[in-house]
Image (cartoon, rainbow, N blue to C red; front, side, top):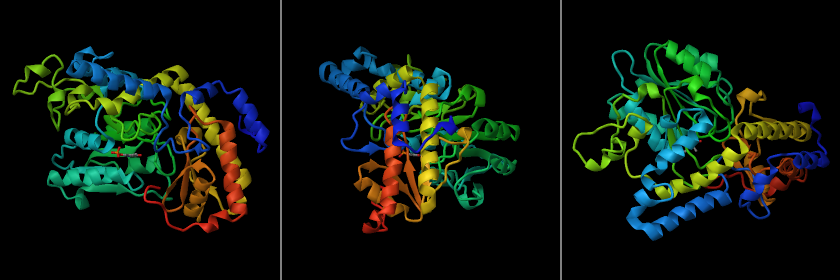
Length: 427
Ligand SMILES: *Cc1c(COP(=O)(O)O)cnc(C)c1O
């Protein structure tokens, strides 16, 4: 495949003609006169997502409180229905997944269950490249347990500032570590970690391990039944296109269903007993037991339509196209941009990369601004990375060609020099 790539525009048009996923682009609201490369931050709205949201809005309008049992899918069972379908994207069992709250809040509630320092095992192992919100959550949570992060948080430092070496991480696993928390895909470089081997190594050492899958769910199909991590969590508003701030999700391996919930609430009670409103907490022994309060119906309704697209397109076919799009993009970057000081921070091997390409340049801030002006929607991540995500549901090969050509033009004509070296408030 790789050898087929060409820098000719006509090659990209030919690829689009034979792309059997191209029809999905029509199901999305594309932004006028723009090439959207930011689906790894906020996915676009699909007609399907809009429809499921509008249906739930209408149910509220016409049914009032009766929507809880009378909606198209009764609202009372709606998160279970969505979670069962979302489970397909990570290869988990239906009852191991829940659609609930937001990424960072879900991390807190998972820590409350899985971080139980005892004896010598008091430490949490993380890495220095992870999305900082996870670090804030872990440090603050540790303090509530009376542990000082300076002594009990172990940070694995990346050797090159971009990627993490799984073997070196394994060497940091010792009998003082209680929990390991790692990203599945690094938000900056786009490196995909080997979750299977990391989980195996952690378990050999008697350590619990969880993954932040915000940058992989919907982009990389996982096989959690095979990897067997203890827990995971993610947001659904990136590749899964559930809308801004849309409800996130978490996974709890069924071997932990009998663990006591750390942050309990009435939505974690067995479904049939919930409305008995007893003072005693009868824990639902599935991922549903970790829910805290009433489902955010309007923030999860778009997920229903969005998941339809995944089911129709097939997660493996989407991954296949995504890998081709990112490989093609990296080919064009190397051919057309490397003479101008551009490089790629994303690993080249297929099994080591997620859904986006991290383009590096010392003038990345200004080039990113110039790109926006030219109708591309990328994003910038300090200190020197422009992230470009060709999303297989709505990005064409021609889009990729155009984006790289625009970067080249911006550099050759010096257009970026008209911009400040300062990033926007939301980059
Ligand atoms: C986007 C992202 C988050 C976002 O957290 P929220 O609580 O949803 O705002 C967390 N972790 C990672 C790795 C992310 O990429």
